Length: 170
Image 1 (cartoon, rainbow, N blue to C red):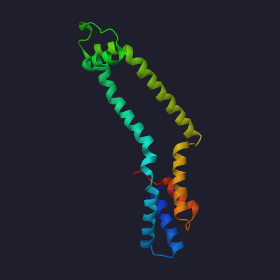
Image 2: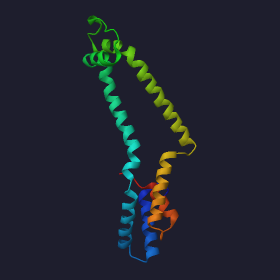
Image 3: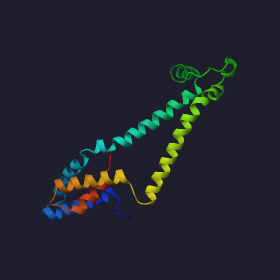
Image 4: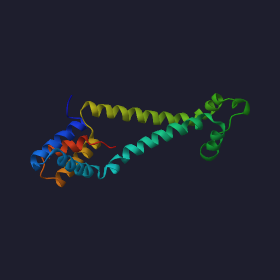
């Protein structure tokens, strides 16, 4: 298995390096590695905010769109406050599918556009991965490694940067 993306392997390598540089036993090197871990965790929450916000938005949108399309009371409220379209006749709103047929007149452009934007974003992201690029994530991980180098200059720069890159968000 490659060490490149293996957090535990990188951590073990860093501990062995600390043992060598500081001339200490494993337990003392592990304590130093814990200090490095604390430094690596600084600002970790803020760097994960874009992903957390995207996850929250996706979850909320996915849950909210179903009643907005298929629930009559929600659809009537939304129509009254935001859409102001003519309400279908009562005989055309007897089932949730009929409600969906009526609401689809205004929901389809929104959901269709959102779906296309997501599809295009996923395609662009896939092409970035195909090119080996992860601009924001790579920059954040590299910056975390550089902060470790600044805080612990006595240790190998490349090891600390590599450790910062594989350090987990959780």
